[in-house]
Image (tube, rainbow, N blue to C red; front, side):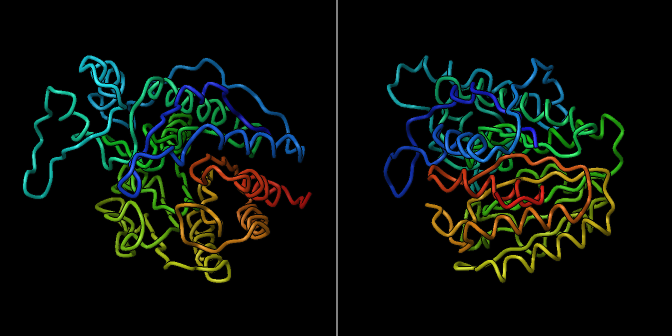
Length: 344
């Protein structure tokens, strides 16, 4: 399997994350890619290719124009304040202060466009996010001939909604890939999100559409980020009703239980008969992931790949979560090797 990957992901290299009441080194950091790339090379998954220099205007089919403009200038506006830290929001429109008026001042803009404050904006953030879009678009355009590809995106994307960032995500890479496939003639796309955290952004973007079916296996939002979306009763709206399904699971969920929900999702894929299958690939379901609570073991990821392959569809894997421990490389490649029918 070919991997599309940009070394320019390093442009996104924030030094701070608000966690446990402290500013800590981000869990989503460049070392994640080193672990994955090393595993791809060591286990001979296949060629690693650079993205092409591609037009990214399709972003505007997914994201609000004013939101994109905000991301383009946020760091520059923050620097004008003369502050020493990275840009972290401190105030939001809330249940007691609902507002559709976008502030002029950067502090207010950050709060308006952020869904959470763990994700700081720093020098190179938006440039890195555009690199991830180029990666996923390059892979998407190759999918017709290759049948399966791995878009090794960083930063990830599934928490980014039409006009909000957070959860380490700025542009929704898998949603952009879906729009590209539809632009190229696909009638139906299925997005399967196996990341530990609910893909709230992807759900919100396609919630009222029948041409993109979204299914997510994740930690119960009553117990896990993003907390306010991802419940089992969220099934779509309007024309999209019945084309959204969530599988929230409890702390300590083992693979024997997790995989039953995967089997159900695969039945939904086979019934929907999409033109392509997009996988939001997070491996933070692993038992030792630092910010998750499922109990999957490394060998389980082979079986995940095998089950996804049983759908027999053009399949694009898009990297989401799984944090900076060595096993992120092992588990990512296990999924892809399992998909290809190899346990090496």
